[in-house]
Length: 150
Image (cartoon, rainbow, N blue to C red; front, side, top):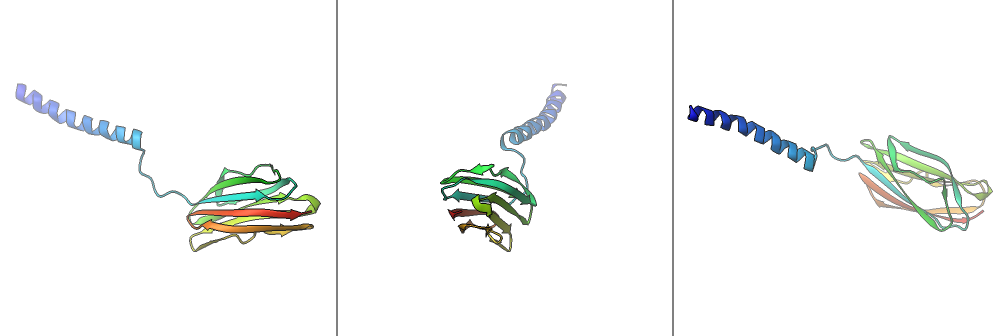
């Protein structure tokens, strides 16, 4: 009788130990998932002497992780981040400038290529935006420097 009890105990203990180990692995390491979604990081610097105020924002095909503030003070930098669906997406932010002008900062993050098309200033004043793509798809990074006067 002792031999059968040992075998039963051994056969029952093995699955319980396996389930315990699996549970610990999930708890401490997480469950393996598909690859991360594409992201966009926008670093916007207001290099003017006036504050700029948020007029519009869009995170098409995704969502803001860190969205835009209502205002960027003079000589201040804001970093925005968004996560997009596959195969990528577009985000843009528009700020109202003094004198009726608007500055739009756009990032297009797609597998075939990334660009900043749509970025620019419309309206009055002497404004400009220097812009640079720092990293491409899937984790796009871009910097923008707004300069000028009303």
